[in-house]
Length: 247
Image 1 (cartoon, rainbow, N blue to C red):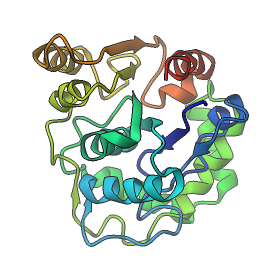
Image 2: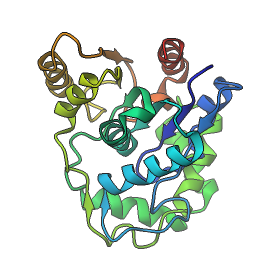
Image 3: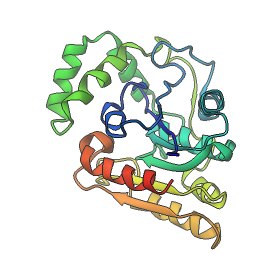
Image 4: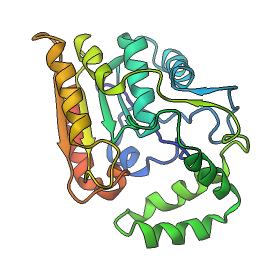
């Protein structure tokens, strides 16, 4: 039986923001949960990765029971994917991190302010903006990306955000030590969060985990920015296919 696929979106996106992946995997069971504070969902008092991870774990236990899933996370969703793997390793077959937000700390206020400010921008205007700013994106990525802004909680920028609860590059070693393989997908260092120094830290953490640890695979897709999976969808899907085939 094929392992289910769980797709965890980044800040200001929603569970609808994976159209290319969902279409590509066909009949495989896919879960695309929307994070708290997004897509009309309630906002916690503190937007902590531990809370967002616990929310996803509850969903997986409810929807999948004891099945182990391949968990993919982009940006903020990458941190959530790591949190799920660390706190509920029995639910995870493999992890794919798509330019995870390892340097976000407690989240720059301007990120949140810009995201919330876009709530009232017409979808058509945001779609046009994406065509100007990100011409390489497949067309079916644009409307879900734009529509997700309107679903953000209006107070998202008003509550504390705690994303630095763990040393995220080091925690990759903890994940692989439990036997869960990790694939880290990055793009151009000057356009992404995870550059060579952070990759080196993650590799060192896995080496320290010992010879029995699962593997960390690094996939760099040149010419891509933070939204690696949108900027180079065919190459990203080939990477995902490799992970799914071995899970």
